[in-house]
Length: 255
Image (spheres, rainbow, N blue to C red):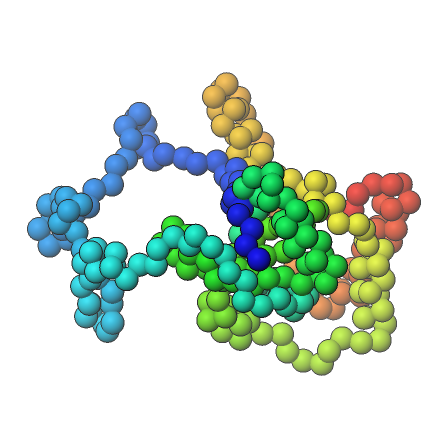
């Protein structure tokens, strides 16, 4: 079954972007492509790519050589298998796109596939090429429409043992200490409402820009809380549980 579709980005970046200036002037900072040996600027058409294969040893690759082996843009997203959505570890998810039927007459097979995937709770796995890069993707149903999630390949995922400088060790917590921690988690249980959360750092950056534009003062953020000591852990848990219950009683959101 073939369903003509269109691809749309499901997210947008609202990061505040900056240009660079020399302090005390209105002079923009520009970067040049400079030969580190001669100090001379190099034009784009004179630049090739090099991949380091050993300490100080590089393999030089021409742009045309990369173009010859680059995959073409995918015209189709061929589903190779359907897997249980719960089997996909969240660490694999990268970016989400919405899929829409290309024309109204394609809505029936589109909706048929979406409902079948919803009923079976499965995701369609496919390889897809976009902007010269190949992606592993998962096709899912979301609120009546189809979504495509680009995934990291297995060899792109790092395990905790690969990266943690300090790994948790010692006896697993139990007894009253664990009961208290469970009580704290349960006292802060709530429904998932993503609209309740905002990118407060970006908001503060925008406030900083507006304040400086008007010549106003900038508010300083409070210092982060200190780490809880092992000796004070039970006391800290008890205080946290009591504070959480009080806030819940007043109908306030727990931070």
